[in-house]
Length: 429
Ligand code: UD1
Image 1: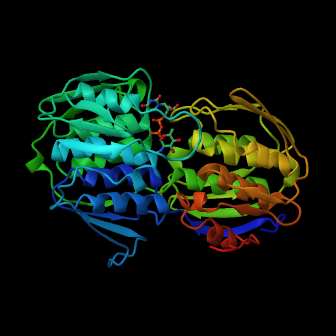
Image 2: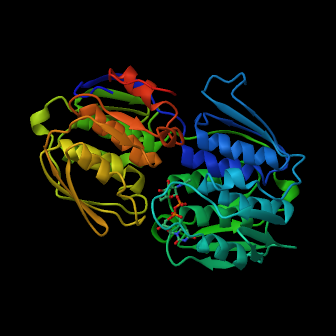
């Protein structure tokens, strides 16, 4: 990309990766045909579809009559294989949520240790804790985790802290368990709510008590597997992709409009963008948002931001924020509270001329220095997207290598930004 070219125009936001993946896993639990509309067309969805196929599910994508983007139709009537192929499991961490669904459906599952982006320690102890509490026996054989349950039984499960994936896994196993499961300290991310809404539409019985948003209390009344049935479901838009483009506009300047945006889920992000000097106009019912960052003199850093669980500022937008902060005047301190090694892009930003230092879990950006284009390496999904943002602002040409990581979560970052007037193209797509 050739930087220093303000953005201008309007684009549509894709469906949410983090909502679609657990819902695809949930299809495994449902003996029938589900149609997911508005699925994002990204590598991770491809991996999950391959995993479903490997168990005997029939998966058709895209070639459907729908007009709401990419669709996936999953028929799990003939699922019988409980061993998941290592190739896809090690490529994608969220494959681990298939454990809960497969225990509920087949009573048995065997996976190897899951992979995913290299952003620090990513244990799965809480996932296994949830499944064990529901009655699963779990043991390891070499690099494989094996789980088995004659019968899953509802119980009270209190997580020591909130984990999105562990909550999803536990919900999936509890849907067809005998009796009622109460999860305390469940994750409260919108993607959890979506998974439950999808499951309820398919015949599950999950309650959100009034203390869900305060204490993360979820109540799952077990139902017979035969009560579950296929459904059609629309995947919500991707709050992280929308947030990435909002930071891109803040950093590169100009005025953009985003359509299909989950506005309520971006309250904290909007506050930060406004705090950094951009104008934000929202049309909540129309799901549209406009970011105006034309007046470059007004773009400044706010002193301190920390990542935390929803509804606080999401860790997935921490790297895009860092890239944007390099362009804003003044100093920003960012504390990363969710993942231990999520500052991998800092070295690449420094090579572009940014003044960023790291102290343990905190990054300090002294913004306002000119970035200079060079060859950088994506390394992981959100960090890769952040380097694209930095490239849009840098003098000269920036080349982001290993852009395949970005394709794991962004359907077409190059096409989207080109539509907004960026001078950007794929080399060796
Ligand atoms: C999900 C999202 C990811 C997002 C993250 C936090 C998907 C596919 N991915 O990841 O994009 O960045 O939520 O919002 O939805 N932990 C443990 N033990 C466990 C599980 C987690 O210690 O068994 C720790 C993790 O190392 C991390 C924290 O808990 O420090 C939160 O992780 P978690 O919420 O589980 O994230 P993911 O589900 O992996």
